[in-house]
Image (cartoon, rainbow, N blue to C red; front, side, top):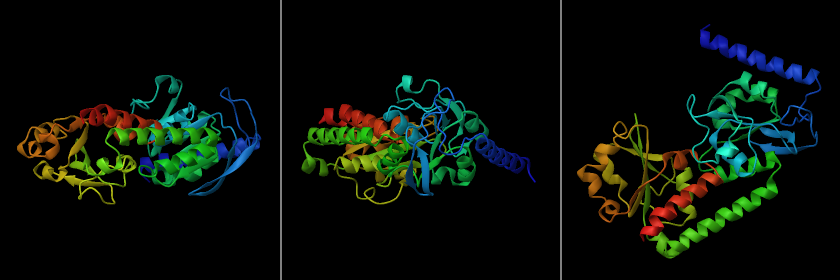
Length: 325
């Protein structure tokens, strides 16, 4: 057996042992604990999830989140998790969420690679993640604390937020968050000249990625869903289901649109942003010729998968696109 498989087996065994210990101590799924680890309100409610029904505390106090959308949901609803995963080792939990809302959070591994021992050490009373990220860890996580999974992330962010709000006991607060977002969308759509005018404007999103082809984002993405909410038009080759249309610098003419937002992951040179935006094909794009290209924060547009992140995206669009009309 390889060393990695041995470590994996050890972690799973530890998680099972943790569950036995918790049960022996009276720490079953109805046992909630406050931020100091003391037993709290044991009232529970049942949440319907992709993995089946899960009984969770009515007011969880020690929440661990294993993806950026769950982190956004928790902070948006006024909850600071005790633990969270990061995108990369030693990376910040977020660059767009309020710093005060992130104080005291402990790192518990990477997204899709959570550290089960670190999670157990935090004595959580609720764990939030998704099937697409952590299906392989579901049994082990559930042995530690009630675990609520959404199916996936990205375009389902609104549905995921509703699930998170239910699990966190914050359904009423969530209604106001949703209403505020809808108001923001309506305000920006009107700033763009109203639904009819917005629909006539083709808006695209381009992401330059270090180590990969450039991505033109389609409708089944976080960004794509926001553009649909705004009722803006989309280039025909991007107004379709799917994640992205990947292109080389020699194919950047496929990014043609009236307005282009773009971001870069990694080094601009290595991601081919520098060469592409300096090349003749980029300069021939309608948005470039008309001064309607806007570089935006990759961390927000790609990792801000939630209502606070969506609000930041709308803010950047309002600052750039709407102001330039």
